Length: 335
Image 1 (cartoon, rainbow, N blue to C red):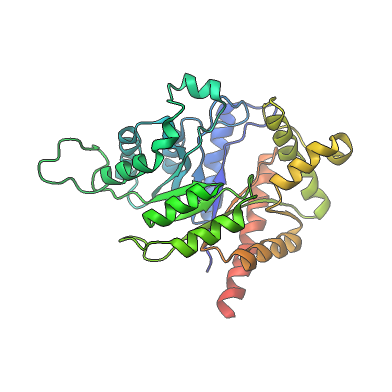
Image 2: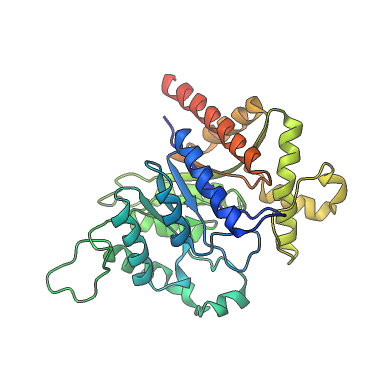
């Protein structure tokens, strides 16, 4: 069965607040655990009114405490914002409290604008040391050696699985070089997907823990009882994307009926390209779209996301997607 997972940005819908968003994330995680989802990941973003997962390890700790089996992780932590030792301690603590359930996906971008990056005391050249920082972080999770003076406590010996996240060829090359799993951000930046995947698979160097390449495909899903309802629900994320790209980020907008008519054609084309790796529609339409993505890219896992204003509708969307993934997995196993 092809594993299917969730990427949750803990969206803050218009008319609500961050507390509601985080409570909704925990509720969604419990819901997805019952539906058979493999992982529940949250992402680091800063200074964004519509995203409540800025303190990612804290949010993940809350979600882990509200669930029992589903893997919990970062998708991802923007490592240049942090000292590797601090992240080792944070995720080592999570792994100590929730053994064999914690993942750590790592990104190279700041996850925010440059002004906020400076407020984080981030060295704007820090992304240049990303490969070295990843290697340093990996070492902190291994058992401490004799006489080792610098240790992550908690953290050492937990061997938290690391994943490289990316939307460019750099991440693919690094993941292949280090023998790590690779998750591509095709849910919002699909431009280099085909080339990055080819580089990752062709240049992969086996590691002790990952003898074979492991590729996670990210896709949006907006599922409802009808195609029309799903298109309506999707308009919240479309509006949010336009707002973000035009320098006006805010809370997740309420859906609208006439997004196409209201939106400038250039902005609409930008959104269509960015969200092209999506499955939008009724259960049958979503299953066909996800099956097409699986056939095209042969991922080892697919991680689904979808910012929907109404929490109940979002839960229903992930339930429909889970049924679709089960049907796709059954068909693959029988082939």
